[in-house]
Amino acid sequence: MRIERIELRRIELPYITPFETSGWRELANHSVIARVEAEGSVGWGEAPVGVGPWYNEETQSTAWVIGREILAPMLLEAELRRPEDVDALFARVRGNRMARSAFEFAVWDLMARLEGRSLSAMLGGARNRVDVGVSVGVQPDIDTLLRVVAGYLEAGYRRVKLKIKPGWDIEPTRAVRERWPDLRLQVDANSIYTLDDADHLAQLDAFDLLLIEQPLAHDDIIDHAKLQRCLRTPLCLDESIVSPEHARWAIELRACGVINIKPSRVGGLTAARRIHDLAAEAGLPVWCGGMLETGIGRAANVALASLPNFTLPGDISASARYFRRDVVRNPFALNPDSTLSVPEGPGSGAVVDEEFLDSVTLERVVLT
Ligand code: SMG
Ligand code: MG
Image (cartoon, rainbow, N blue to C red; front, side, top):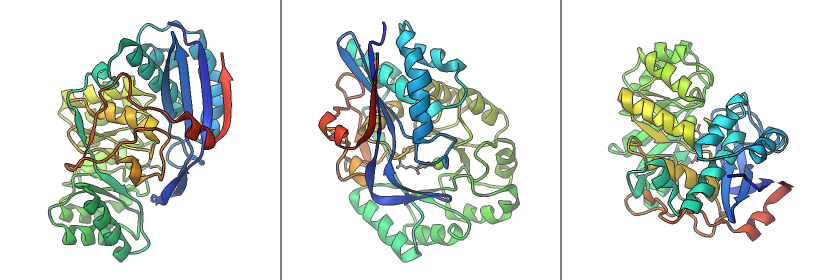
């Protein structure tokens, strides 16, 4: 198969509330969206990059340029037989994995639609509902935090992740744990600590957390292995795992007990599934992370999370947790059991609202 036409756009879709991590604050989704066309069908993908290189090295501008100047031309020239061919095609591109993932998702979606199968089925999904939780950004004070968490619990979420940073870690976690002794709770530091903080972080062991996510540097594996030996709570790597090789290194070095898989972070669904398989072989549970995606990227995450070893709840909340209006006509809604339903229709299931998408598009280009 040849991809006949690619439409790329950069968008700005405001969040209902700003999202604050240990190091930055996001006011809107600034993804790059790819739409690919072949044999009378279409596929959609999302690179959930931000304005600045704060989560990883990519930004909306880098994904836009690499997508337009390098990846789209490569894809238009390629002969594709299977969705996995896109991962192989882009293997010689260094980094830029979120940019790559937009095209990779789009081809998976397109081929699944052409075969009349769901993306979940194509990937080897094993369930029709996926467990999800909610990620709560840094809040101004503990009273606000407790109010925000209470609101999400009322909405039906049964697993909560707190963003932490120095000065906003032990006390907020203690406060939430004391108020909800049985809540499935975890924390995420987005790379703000160093090994010197090992004793400080060990205080988190008191709160019966599911995991502590990415406390140390975004590109570290070695120090995480050292830190893991000082903690009872499993460490979970996010930023550090950008490829199946990184997952293998982390597993061999015992740098973590859990892996957060974001298909966008690792270049797409093919690499994400490989990491899922490696973790399963090693006996490590995985869960699907999130990058506050629109309904397009969210659909890819939900399909991936239907694979068997995704045994912990994902950061894949319902659309209404992020946006007043999503760019799809069938936004994900939360089921009463804190799950999202896996779409059964052909492809990812996302029904893109192109008119609304146009209204949040900053720039658009068509490549043939
Ligand atoms: O998608 O609900 C979501 C957000 C999940 O906390 C979340 N993501 O490091 O895991 C993470 C962060 C990155 C967010 S970057 C804006
Ligand atoms: Mg994280």
